Length: 152
Image (cartoon, rainbow, N blue to C red; front, top):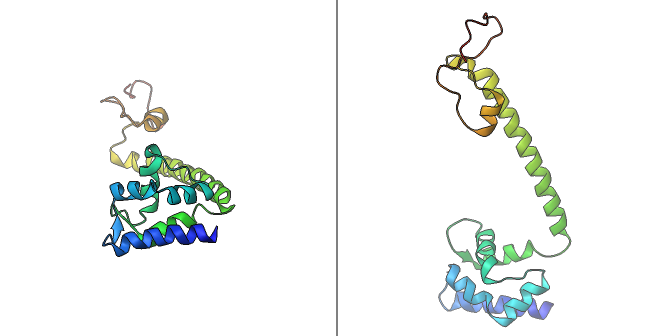
């Protein structure tokens, strides 16, 4: 594998030496079609095809400038090496659950604390969850009004 790493690294370095300080997607796709690069990708567990090459490109483009530097390419490939991949996926899943919980808490805080200060408009949980707005004329119920005072 060391010789394959060296060959792919040499190919990437040659592209940089040829004046490409970084690769935009079309150059990246051409680079990916090189048989040695394809063999390297397969060895690290990637199957790069036209359909997924752009997603890989975006993952490797760490600074989101639309091109991949040699450093970004090396760092990107290193993310796919070894058993850490499964650990990374598990961590991402846990982070996603945590973020979802935080967003739900923020939504509840906004609904419970800020909407009453904004004129008392009632926004039911189903409206908040669906992202739609309550019908005009709907008031927030404080629990102290008589049933005739509450608009529907």
